[in-house]
Image (tube, rainbow, N blue to C red; front, side, top):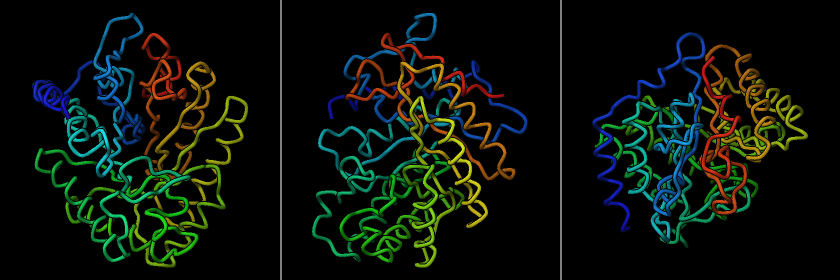
Length: 340
């Protein structure tokens, strides 16, 4: 893609700035709790001319700005062969380099698709269409290995890796649809898990579901995985409440997190959150409350919270749940991410 050369140069220049003194790492009991953001759109936004500004209106690099606001971790999705290249492996490597050179922790999110994988669609990549279960397992392992070895070759080690995105009904449909064949989904999940551990033995593998308030969904899926030999280290959740129901959703999410810790002994992580950008004060309350609740779990079991694409603004891709205003400046919502 024509923008890659520019971004690779940018990444090389950023290597001269391995850490950002403007935002020291938190100390004390909050130090291990990730306060992060998924910024997978950031290179595409920049290439389209979007810019990011601090509260005073000074233009800044988007990732560096998030770090200055208190974030210490970046989540990045990767698609197998996206039509326009964005969020493919090469684009991922550019963004991962930038995050790494800022001293930020890294969560890699494999969709195992050429496009969005979510509760409504889990389409195999075009190159994998028509493959049987054994071929899909091999493809999952090969793709996971290729991306992670490319990171490893650049001296970048992700702290966490997701095998699939919002897989409440499995992945790589129809073969890996959990409601139809939980064993097949478990086998595909394990192909990804084993590939991660072969490259990065200490990296924690996340299985991530939608609707973090829905305990019934989580019990069904993880009971099914467990019964079929499924492997995971972390149970990940998405949580997108409305301004009117966030308190109830947070209570339900906390109850679900507690159950996942007690039932499976798993670590838990909120991999995605969001609320309408123009509800910033309410979003801050929601996020502060969610983080406070997460800290009531047994020590070390709650790993962090990631805002999904907070830097999106001005109706980018039709998405309105970011945390920047129409002028490209962060809203009050992101104050919740400052270390306590």
